[in-house]
Amino acid sequence: MLKTRTVTRPGPSIWCAALALMLHTACTQNPAADRLALEEYLLKLKTWSHVEAEAAGAIERIIATQFVDDDEVHRQIAESRPRVRSHLLDVQAYVPRSDAVRGVHAQYTLAWRRLMVAYDRIERGLAEGRQDEVAAGRSGLVSWRRDLRRMADNLRPLMERYDLIGAGSKGGLPVETGRPSF
Image 1: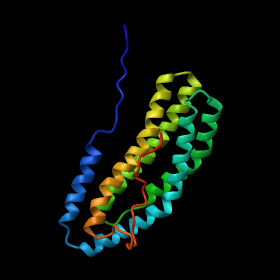
Image 2 (image 1 turned 45 degrees about the horizontal axis):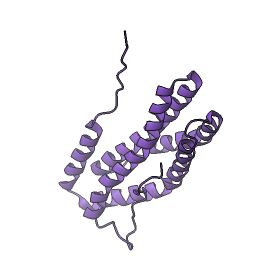
Image 3 (image 1 turned 30 degrees about the vertical axis):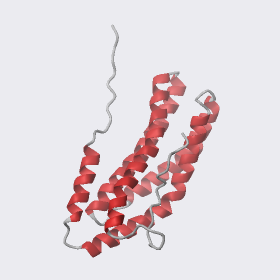
Image 4 (image 1 turned 45 degrees about the vertical axis):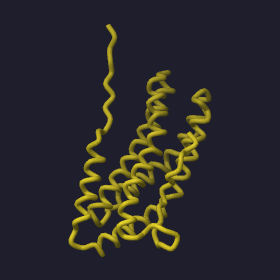
């Protein structure tokens, strides 16, 4: 008898919660405080952008192996994992000062947690010879970038509301939203 395995993924509830928080913020009593919280978050994202770039590079190199060079995949994960783990701790320690920023930050945090899970699944799959785990891990690597793009898409309306988009603004959208090469 064939056993089926159900893969559980976080449902759309995190995205619905983020949207609800953003809508709630649209009606807040203190727009100046919300703008300040958003500016602070944008600056924080800029300080974190180098970790995102390093992780993206590692992911590109891992995917470029097409998972036929186990040693290279292990080496890339071993080099990337400590930075990602440290970054995740920093991200989890950060407490945004507005509901809307908290919703966006929850998405950002979830993306980094999923990346750690993807690394774990790839390594477990390679160690146990389980291609399903490797495939799930690879999917998680690709999802990480998509999750960051979705977070940036949700951040953009907040930036527009507080006029923080544009060449002369203090804030900018630090999360790269272009098409990844993987």
